[in-house]
Length: 100
Image (cartoon, rainbow, N blue to C red; front, side, top):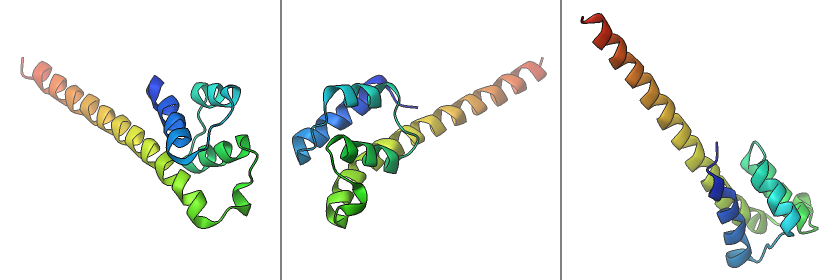
């Protein structure tokens, strides 16, 4: 779902822009096996920082979640677009082969 650099770039931005600089071992694990949802990755970032998501105020949580959700949404759009392109190409190939 994600391109190799996306999670690393996101974690770097969270560190630079918001000060959430998680330990390298946690970052490597999240890059290798990103959680299935933006909220799960957001929670993982806070856990790696020693924080509990449930105890954070809404603005703090939202500042991280919005950045994470944007990366997940971009990956989902890219995946949907690729599936749509493949479907269109298969239709065109079928029509091309049935015209002969």
